[in-house]
Amino acid sequence: MTKFIKGMELCESFFNTCAKKIIEENFPKLKYSAGLIGYGSDVLGYDDPISTDHMWGPRFYMFLSKEDISLKDEIFQALCSGLPYTYEGYSVNFTEPNPNDNGVQKPKLIGTGRVNSLVFIKTFEEFLTEEIGTADLDNIKPHEWLSFSEHRLLSLVSGKFFTDGLNCAEIISKIKFYPKDVKLYLIASNWEIIASEQAFVKRCGECGDDIGSKIICSRICERLMRLCFLYKEAYAPYSKWFGTAFGKLDIDDKIKQAISGALSAESLSQREEKLAEAQALTAELHNASGLTEPVDYKIESYFGRDIKVIFAEKFSWAASKELIGTAFENVPLLGTFSQAGGVASITDDMDFKKIADFNRGLFNTI
Image (tube, rainbow, N blue to C red; front, side):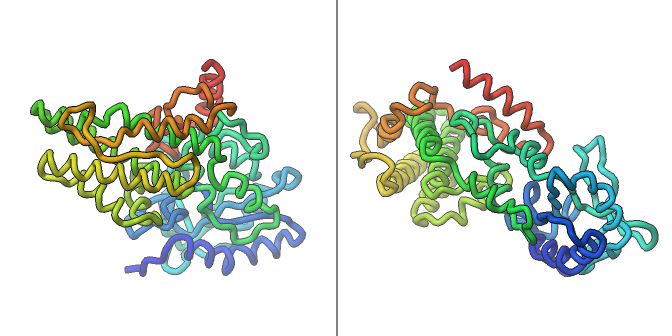
């Protein structure tokens, strides 16, 4: 059985050992960038042996200038002719894209013929447009940030360039994280959404709706987790890796423990207690951020009822106050398209150029 190697390590070694020599021997004057970026658990460092069954293996993206993109097919054929059949025990050859499965390619061991490598050759502008709907990273309008898939933003800034003659890393640095006004808008949105349901965990439970109580609790927990990502200026991945990334987030473990306790609580009283604790701890993270004036809060009863809250709307109000005079002053507090549209987990088989164009039109009507 082949020993598992993390994809990023495997791909970097594969490029430097095998592909780079072929490229430089056949195209000695070519200026290009190459690396592992975009789709894949290997880009985020979350890949494991299960990941190796499709779209994973010795691979990389190669970026050419607009002047050299006409060499794309010639370069690909040179690689197909010169690359080995396997590298570190993994197939370098892949099936053709499956049109019935979103273009998925799987490793296919061969011993003769030309290799069909998992190397994608594009201009960087073409790649960025496919990923987030635009390549003009210097002129992103405030509302446009809301149309971007947060997972795709993460997949771009988490990549690594093995060689970077076109300075792609510098280009990507422009979207390292949301601008301050966008971040404040998303913070206000998440606190507002929490506020809209903050009393319902206890209320549903008291009415005998334990399932409803648990569902609402999980929604609030997700919003608290998203707030933690925002305060730490880290993009959150889509659903498959959301909890994994949160577990690695550089925050007080007490927050993680309180959220976990709320989700796993066996009784309504324990659920309410842990959820209130998680909100209070996240509130501390807000005040420590310095993004707004400190917000006074405490765990208290909800308008005299036996329901514990911190009145989450106070934090939404504080963040909204900082948005006065910005492009987000009168925008409804809905969050990003990924969150409000419920498509945060759909990342690799959607046309985000069309989605971005639609969403820009939507926000222009607000």
